[in-house]
Image (cartoon, rainbow over all chains, first blue to last red; front, side, top):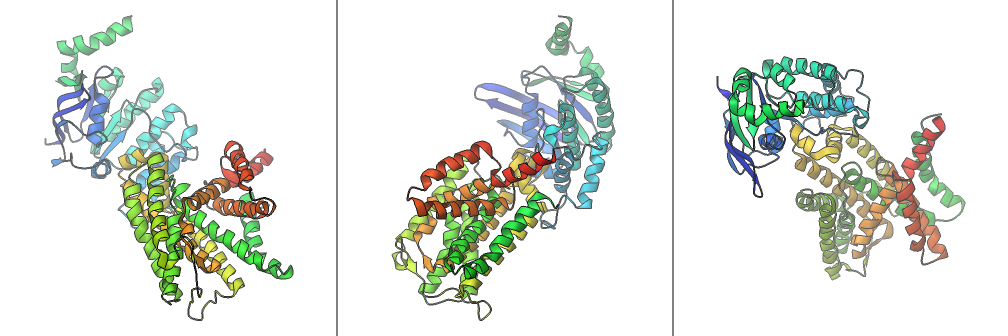
Length: 253
Length: 315
């Protein structure tokens, strides 16, 4: 199967710090691929380079067979790459529903109907309301985003990302700060998404990672030290030393 | 009772509509000039607020667009062309071109850098105007005639002039209301709220900010076209940075979160000036504390403060 995302030799240095070191990564269509690794391993930097917020120092990124490095952030988004941020990024002064309406609108072609009323437009409001329902925020649409709980804002951001109908969804620690029941619901939701899209998932919650990911890449000090199926990753000695072991040690401590 | 904001808008607009009657009854024709000027600045402030309040772009150079409108009337007039259609079309188009040129560089920048570069461009145009001695420069130039629109409207009649200004304000309020709620308006509001998020959703935010800036510039030029006609005078003083600052103060004072706030701000500031300057030349000494009070106690301006009253009472 031809990968939808193909990363080769991706490197990024900030000053003297090597945040990403020659990362190779392939993501198949409809695949859920998890990136794990200790804090500061360069996971978020990798995502920022995929979306175009950060320019790489070296390497190539191909999306759907096309070199996307020259493309700006909004052009990559228009191709079908959507991101949920580690630090929730929504329109805090908009009601939840309006957040999604703006996101749905991004998918509709250019400057046609720019003059028409937006928020009362059923072709926008209906799909937006359906997405809120899907992520579990049905009935919360009129609440201003700033007044939503932390977990709800994460759900809202997911609805916004889905509204753009992405082919590649980048999720940066979606489970962070979520309660156990919310996490379970989110796992179900993400699993249901992969039918028509690929998901790249950064997550510290190992239960969620092993429940979702078909493949896992382990990032340590900016480099991929192992990549493979969950079973292979668990068995990998380097991974145990570098990551799982320290994680366990932390839990036992 | 209808919502308070409807009551306020209706009351203010009715008061403005009644000015010619009051001026006639009390035999005070200069009311028309004073309040006509208020309405013109209200138009400028409403135009500025499209980028300031709705788009979050603090333009410190909108006097330049007002000036372009005024000079479109003045320069044509100096060559003996009083045709309003030509004057107005070129004034608005000229402001559009200037807005495109200034905006294409400015809207790339944010915060203080945006403020400074719009100021810099406006100063550039001010010095250009002040160097145009053929058209009066800093001393100004008296117009031989107001804009003529065939025999459709006679702006020489001061009452007609006043109602023409009032009609433009009403038109611009309706236009702004529609724009703010349109797809374009929601996109611009989204950019103000979280520009990176808008880009991540796939919006070319630069392009949308530029469109908003150009629309605002073109609307603002109309206030200049009207000002030249009302005062029968054009001067480089119309383009000073103090003038740009006044427009900003009007928006802040009235409340930039709404479409109508700037109208209240322009009215409050200019009537305060009118009344206070009758007592003392140092009236600005009293304006400072007033602005401080607004900034400290009514950050949403007079408009926001009035609406808060309704909320308080509802409790």
